[in-house]
Length: 289
Picture (cartoon, rainbow, N blue to C red):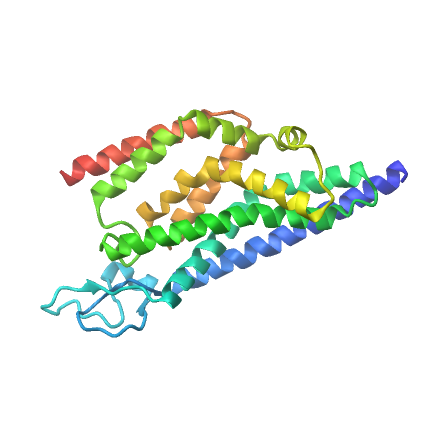
C-alpha cells in the first residue's frame, strides 16, 4: 500500500471510529437525560402498605419532594419497599448506559490509536473490526462495575440511606465517601492505572501491540478497561454523594475523568482534586456533628 493510500485509509478509519463513538455517546447521554427528566425509581420511599409497583419520580419537582404515591403529610413514616427482579434489572441497565456515556469520550483517543496502529501494522488487519472487539472488552469491565454499583445501590436503598434523587441521606456517609475518594487519588495504584490511561502508545507496546484476532482484541480491551476502572472507580462512587441521576454531577465527574487522562501533568490533577474532595468530606462530617 502506497503512503498516499495508507493516509487515506487512516483518515477513513478515524472517521468511522469517531462517528461510531459520537453516536454511542450521544445515545447513552440521551437515555440518561430522559431518565433524569422523569424516571421510575425502585426503592423510592412509599407509604406503608403500598403496592409493589415502582414509585414514579419527577426530577423537576425534586425540591418539593413530589413523589407519586407518597403522601408527605401522612402520619405514618414512609418506608422503602424491597426491590423486585425487574427493579434490579432497570437500575443495572441505567448504570450500564450511564457508564457508556461517561467513559466513551475518555477512551476515544485509545480507540483511534488502536485503529491507526492496526492499519499501519497490516493492510488486511481489519482494524475497524478489531477496534470494535477492543471496545467491547473495555465496556465489559464497566458492565461488571455497573453490576457492583447496582448491588451497592440496592443495599443503600434497603438501609434507607438514599434520598429520592439517589444520593446518600447521611452527611457522615457522604463525607466518608468523599474522604476515601480523595485519599485514593494519592495512592500508588491510582498513579499506575492513570499512567496506562494517559499513554495509549505505551500501553499497547507493553501489552504486545495491535491484535487482529477477535479474542486477542477483546482481551486487550479488558486489560485497558481494568486499568481505567482502577483509575476511576472511586470517582464513580461519588455519584452516591451528589446523586446518581444528578445530570450536572454526572457531567462533572465525566469531565474530571477526561481531564485526568488527556492533560499531560501526571498526578497533578488527581492530587489537587483529591485534596479538595477530602476537605469537602471533612466539612460534611463536621457540619453533621
